[in-house]
Structure formats: C-alpha cells, structure tokens
Length: 340
Image 1: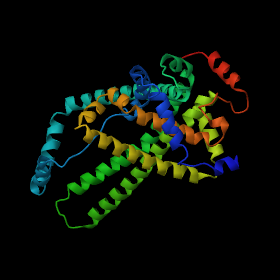
Image 2 (image 1 turned 45 degrees about the vertical axis):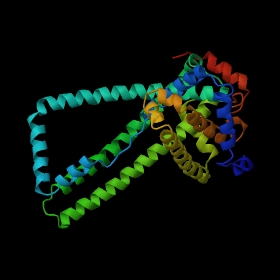
Image 3 (image 1 turned 180 degrees about the vertical axis):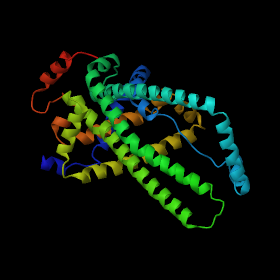
Image 4 (image 1 turned 120 degrees about the vertical axis):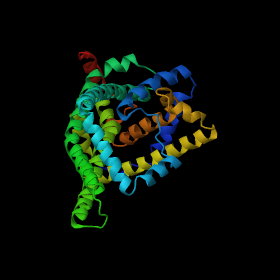
C-alpha cells in the first residue's frame, strides 16, 4: 500500500479521463445516449443548484448611481424608511416568510434526496460505460439513502455555527452602518474587529463544509459504489487509507481548483465563439447539463481514476471488489437487499 500511495499523481488521471470521455460520448456519438447520461448528471447536480448556470455581475451605471446616492444623510433616511415599512406590514410579512422558509426547506430536502440518487446513477453510467436510468436508480437505492442521511446530518450540524456567524456579521454591519459619526471611535473599532473575526470564521467553516461535501462525492461515493456499504463506512475506509498522508488530499484539492478554472475558461471561450448562443443553452436547466456533459464526465472520471491509484480495490472501472471478498458476493448481496 505504501508503494502504491507513493505513486499517486494528480496528473496521471488526466489522459485516461479524457479517453473515457471520448469512449463514452463520442465513440459513437449518440444524442439519445447524451440525454440519458445527462439526466443522471442533472440529478446529481441538483443539490448544488444544478451543474449548469452562471451568475455574472456587471457594473451597470444604475448600480453605481444608486451606490453614490446611498451615501450621506439620505442613506440613514432610507434605512429608517425600510424599517418603518417592514414593521408596518409585519402582520403579513412574518407568516409569508415562515411559509417561504418551510417551502424552501422541503424543496431543498427533495433536491438533496434526488441528488444522492443521481450521484450513484451518474457514477454507474460513467464506470460501466452505459446509459441507464432505471437500473442504477433501483440498484443503489440503499446506498443513496445512506448518502442522503449523511448530507442531511452534515447540513444540520453545520447550520448552527454558520447561522450564528451570519447573524453576528449582519449585526456588526448594521451597527457600523447606523453610526452617524464616521470617525473611528472605540465602539466602531470593536464592531470592525467583531465583523472581521466573524467573516474569517464564516469563511473557514464554509471552506471546511465544501471540502467535506466534495470528498464525499469524489471518493466516498465510489467506495460505497464498490462495497455497497453506508456513507459512514465509506468515510472510515477513506480516512484509514489516507491516515498520515494529508498532503495527498491537499494536492488533489489544489489541482481541482486548477481544473475548475481551466474548465471555466473553456466554457467562456465557447460562449464567446458562438456569440453567446452556447451561453443561452447553458442556463437552461437539464439542457445546459447535457451541453456540459463532456466536462462533467471528465470530472467524474478524473476523481475515479485518481482514487483507483490507491489500489485495485478502489477501481470502479473494474468489477466491484469488497474489502475482503470476491466481487460476486457483493453484487448478489446488493441485489438481495430490499429496494427502497
């Protein structure tokens, strides 16, 4: 195992991942196959708001004017008007806010559940060179439920400190904005210190949360795919293999940033080259995912090929291998489970 880990590289999986994209999507080219695999990829991306979509901010003149007009005494007058208007309509704004929050929570739960199913469906199609929906939907139902519960628990655990830090940031900003004297008094300095510390802590929590989510999708899901176990068992196995080798994860995450920037630049070039026609397609749900399918298949194949460097029992492109037994036992065990 030590010799295998010593040969782990972030560059080595690039070429086989590119070849996998060619084999799965272009040899031969089949539009129906693209839409089938794209549906699985779209489901997998629901928890992240979908794989397709861009949020670009431009410095419109109107925005600059409103920013300038909000300075000085008028800014405080506008702030007071907003508070008065909210308090005057609180009798219907509060119930509406509660209903919207509950609706968003239900929609979010549904998106995470479907995304957990989609992660295994998409990985199944990529790992097995197939375009299937119904088979992986049924086959990996138990694993997807475990992944959903893990993601739900992770979100609930992270919600408390993140919401607390957000409330602290908002409170500090409000206190700072309401100060009419712009000279740095002691209270203003304290508000700035609280604001800075809260922002740093919020960023740290956010980065940690994103890393856990990414490692779960990139490595734990393939381990569950191979073993048929729970998400907790997948994490335990991953941490056991990488214990004392944190540098592997650091290099992998840094290289993922490089790959993401490269993919983003390629997409921007494509949008410009097509006079924004490609951009119009990319913002359409599901259609945008299908259009980005080569990038998404590469990302999924790249992480799987990287994981396969840890040893044959982590290779999703071969017949599934359990931790200490033959592959047929795993497959028959999975098929014997009740489908939920």
